Image (cartoon, rainbow, N blue to C red; front, side, top):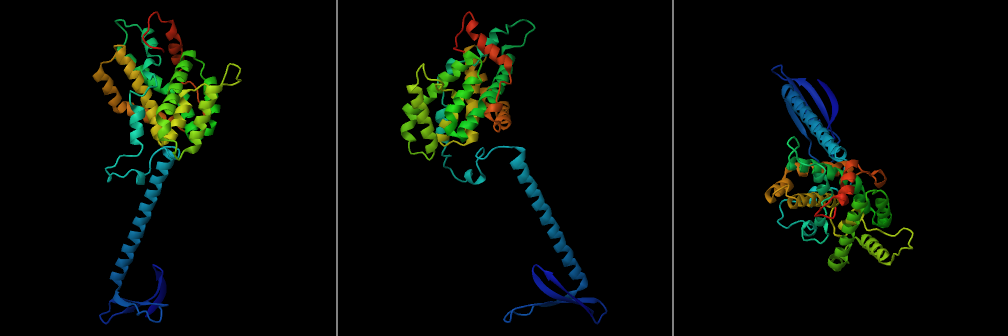
Length: 347
């Protein structure tokens, strides 16, 4: 009779291999190091059954290892491939489909996405009117609808590369609001674009002071509230003799305001880009390029959503000092808007 000691799942056993009366091999397993009151574990079975059990256990261990490796690889791809910062996407525990209660930020998103929000953005075409004027329709030219889709793509790219890093920086560090506002002003060479950004930023600040402030004074984002209040006070007291007066650009103010209103970073960025797309689409309707149903089709399209998602992933990790105009010709179209003989938009 041969015997050996081995551990299975932390239990030390002694395995005795012998021959039965019929000549077939048999295996006897006994539990070693048992406690005084613990019953003896003892079993006897054929060697074939023992080997079969061993193979099954080994196969199960290999399957578990393969699944664990696959899960780890999936988690790694989720964390690194998307390259999104913390707070960009809500966790699975925060987005349960079993509850009928809407997300706490849904009400705020609806307010900021409402066309009645008095930001004055619909007074601007973001360069679309000038773009169409500099592309007169001829027999060989593209249709106005094709020109519009090309312009919308370039306009979103330009906004994301120039403004999105400032939104992210202000959202994460509200105390830098005045610095970010000054840097954004210095990096905006186009006078018309600068004027439009300041006008909408001041309008957003007025909305905060007259509409949202009374309902969010006890928000958990106390540092953001203090930074925004200090910035608003500096704007009111600044004079022509002030060395570096605050300007009130939309991008950094949007980052701080959405942080106070308890939006996630992903929601703030998506809404920032979507609002710009909605403004350009609305300008196309009033310029008789699109009809109202065509405009809604553009806003509801999967292409627009995919484009916004791509721009967010591309620019959300970029630092403000690395931001810059990626579509230089857009500054020319926006800047030449004031030279048009007749126009219906401010920019």
